[in-house]
Image 1 (tube, rainbow, N blue to C red):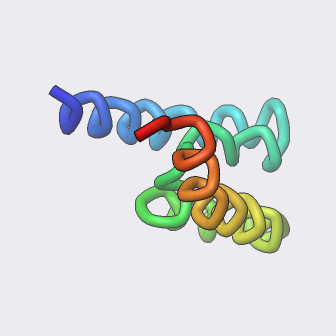
Image 2 (image 1 turned 30 degrees about the vertical axis):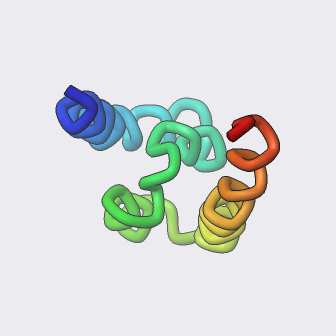
Length: 77
């Protein structure tokens, strides 16, 4: 079930990123992909939004490197 949810989220992001980037701006479209922005939807950003690649990398690295910290902080083992 989790796999299907991830696939649907990615499909929705792939469909919505060009629309959101055109009407709301490139920075707003970064949030649609979530943690997989640097993996799967990076091709859309390379094609459509070359001017926000630095922000994309910062967003991805921030979420990637902070997730272990926050999971240990909020998960009591």
